[in-house]
Length: 132
Image 1 (cartoon, rainbow, N blue to C red):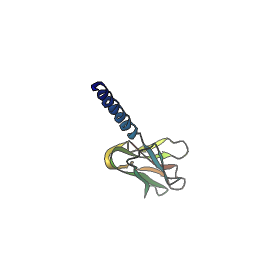
Image 2: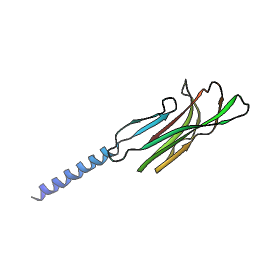
Image 3: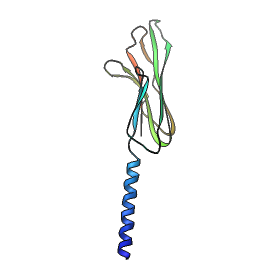
Image 4: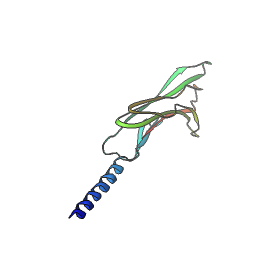
């Protein structure tokens, strides 16, 4: 009888461990200026993040240029995660400016440095990323 109880306890602990591992699936996504939408990958049944991105512009010198930066915010209650904001080349994906990953629990905000772009052609595009 003692052997059966010990076996049941062992099996219960293994099942609980497997369940915890399944609940901590990696989750990631991002916002893209062209599409204006957030894209997600991964599954997390207990908590779904809210992610928002935007681009700010200001006049630059010379007047034929503009400075742009990307802002990203992720609200993910109780989950340690990151938010990242970048200005990238809209054709090649090369990175112009990068906030790097900003880590935290709850709400994280990331702001890329300003990037000077052509006012007329705007080669840059704002993108944000998040994940856990």
